[in-house]
Length: 386
Image: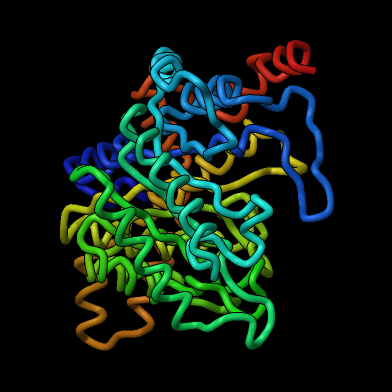
């Protein structure tokens, strides 16, 4: 049976509308050369500076229709004239998205940035974040996305509580400096590069910090930043219920922070995460920043980004097909088998015809990846950039 025939026409149109309104932000750093901890791998045509990164991001939006913003990393994407960059971005049909401060590459940050024992180094890190808030004002960005590499590698290296207090003090200053329409996204990571402890080691620590700061501070969930076996969909549900889910960094992992194409290892997990997001959307208004965080090393940059976006679209489409009324009835009746089957029924549905129909109505290619490959853009930038 055709899955779409199981729904009323009005339900199908509502599903289509929600899919058309889906927005995914791509990262500037996903378009430039990158590598593993051992080597940077160079690709012909990879973007060399922010203007080329914006141009490449515009290609992803051109072929998918749902990636209208680009996240920046400072100082990687530093420019002298932010207004000029903003205008260039808008000319390409995009806007500047989240601003990401870099607090992990300076020599002084070896023992931490905002949690460093030295007050002067903490001030340097804080000043950089305040500079990023100014960049937000100039570019129109509304999200400050903060990840710290801060932590320790050996027992006794520093005092846990002292570092916590330094972090809280610094984040209070950051929070007070933000405009009323800005959101601070606090990211977490349970290990690396601090192999003994990290200062924001899990979603609970990030959320406690956000709750102390106030309603403009929220938790950012990175799909690659969890120990093996973590139930990420449960975390998502809790954060939605607490009104503390602020954003996502979409990627995938096999062992640790592998930075793989989202949905490439465990697509069912991605579907289950979106199942909670859809349930949340139907309960309350959510302002969540959906962002990709991937630096592809062996895949062509733009193709990999398009592939990621398409995987996210599929997960969302399948989650929208879940029969929530029947699911609730099965849950209330304690019918474990039927409740799971309802989810599996939606997950097993081939949503590609539905997405093809939506893309056609949006005026973008039915097969974005194929259309990009046939466009000649990759050969063009390889020739131009070398």
